[in-house]
Image (cartoon, rainbow, N blue to C red; front, side, top):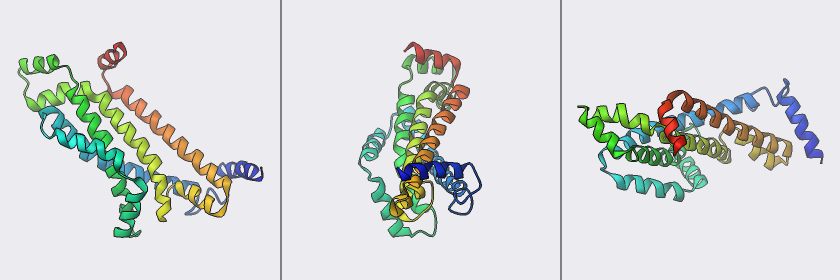
Length: 230
């Protein structure tokens, strides 16, 4: 159990000012790298998938894109994509990590956005048109607020997937919290492996909490109540 005592020493160092806390390989630097990868990939995926999901859900055109996207989400190999883009682009930038993360993040956002818009009660849609609203107004004022919980669910699923998948970036020699896990296994430093794993889990839990707070602030109480009744 020497590694267990080493792990507690690793945690103690985490709360102190030792080697695990300072320098380019320290916890703050690796956490910042992980955050950078995750936020950039999620924002890019959101900019692609949300408008596309809104347009397809509202018009009903291009639904095959949603089907293909859902299937790709199950078929794309994470590590394979990372290695492929590293071979194509090298490791001089973060794009060999960002591009695969975006490709993996788009499907959940796209599918949930589409389903959220298409799942709005047709009578509500008809009533909006009956009040004189037009296409864009119906989408922005009626459909999106009602579909927002499902849209946020897609974003939350993608965010968690990005946080966990970014860990694999360490296999290609890039940074992030995965370095503690990968390097720990390579050097048999199991305290670092466990410590890195704990940090990644905590990161994912923080993502869950952040999206729960966002949903509480942004979703209309009426929509939330309707979901509870269902």
